[in-house]
Image (cartoon, rainbow, N blue to C red; front, top):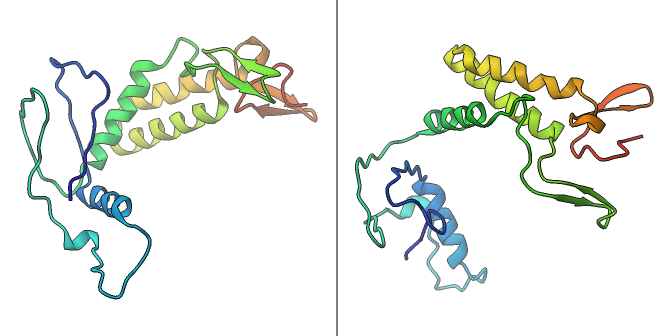
Length: 179
């Protein structure tokens, strides 16, 4: 059985990439893909623990700089994601959504560049957990900067609206906002 993983349509051939794969998850997906869902009395049931990787193959021109088999790289990848939030935070403290969003059968349209309170909250969660792990203040500063959009009304590019006289933070900051 072969399972393929792609790096995207046109990866930069001069860019080094770190690839972190969970063989157990990959095998589970491959088995689920190959499964017909029908069990016959003579069929063999395979489970992820019954399978092992025999080879890793690259198509086209590839260079392997360092191949490691590790039980976990979750912390390292998590901090890469946290650093992405720092590198991509805009001057308002947010991460603008780069696509247009249509709501209510296209009666309400958010142009690319809008901010989402939910996305802000998720990013703040990642950043505060990164700070908790590393004690590096860059993560805490970015999380604090992310709170700025919660003080700006949705009509002015933030995520804040008012609902029944109370602050309401919009996942999709439409105009008019939640009422």
